[in-house]
Length: 350
Image 1: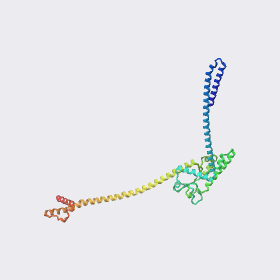
Image 2: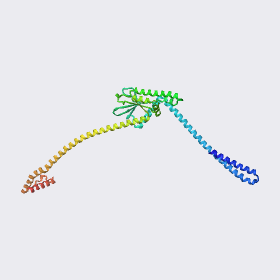
Image 3: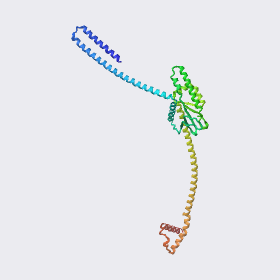
Image 4: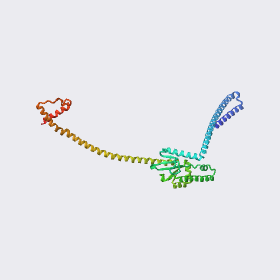
């Protein structure tokens, strides 16, 4: 765009210059007729010069920004290449590669919600055996499921970085042999032992989706052979799915166990409730009997006892006998008054 503008300005300058030359050649107008054209041409040339300077300045600024951006991209590329090289060197070490694979597995376990010591054990030697799986999952009824982490990377990288098809095919075959060798190691380590209450399958974790997919693409028979040996290959995604199913099964079992315990406790409660009701009925009957006996005492027996007392009181009044002061009537005024009233009522009845 800037080049087009510059070309247009140059053409304009040439046109104005040509007009000026034509005017000079005509000469008939004289010097006075040329002065306005010269001034106009000079003004236009000044505008063109200023515009060219601005365009040049803008070009320099943009070029500087582009240079800065290219420098920044170069620095980031260098840093990325350094980091990639360091990671490649680190993963070249078998021990470091194994630790990295275990870390990937732990990330998946945390994502599912598993807790070490509650849902799984790490690097625990199997009882009665020298085998030590990387992870042992704790299942209901004391069952366990073992898992090993395998990261066959060397020949895979060589296969990816191969320069031709022949070299790629050679490293691919070596890579498949490595994977099969790792599977044989798992099968021969007593990870499956019903006597120790393990499940009939063992998990082998491949901590890289690309490698896992590469195995499926170039040796589908390996997956079938692994299942025949009761070995389940899993990537981070498939391991997540398997552990989610295990977690759901464990939770369902826990809920079922809790429900059974609650139902059992409800049965005990029902038995105790029946006993409580029976004892309450027995006690209620006794209370009713006591209430009847009490009613008999304050009713029939009391009236039977008060009749002779009433007659005695009437005889004492007829004979004009006073109540001795030491009888204690003043000490129990309410009782004495009630007694008198009851005897009087008995006398009136008679």
